[in-house]
Length: 83
Image 1: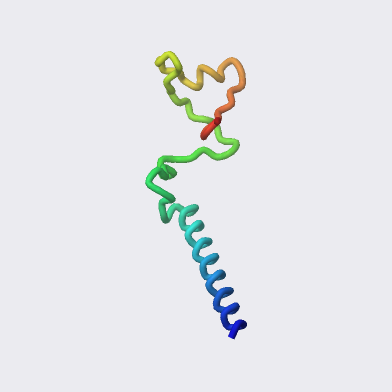
Image 2: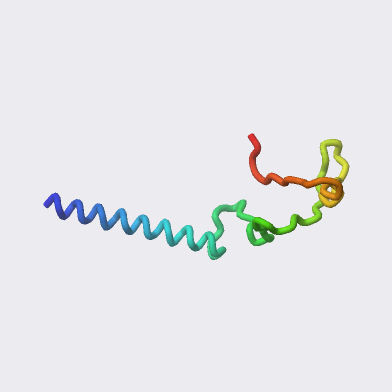
């Protein structure tokens, strides 16, 4: 009896793992949205791509173009949390 329980538990674990893998594949392919904040359909930047010449608000509230920052020296862009 205990062997049957172990087999059922193993089958359930494999099924859950396969379902999670299928879900993550669907998210990566863009078939499903990860959550309501998923904005990947607006475009993406890959490693090695040139950064777009964005206009961002500076600390003083004035617009700053990224192209004007990297004209003189290299520029590093960090996206995400810096805490």
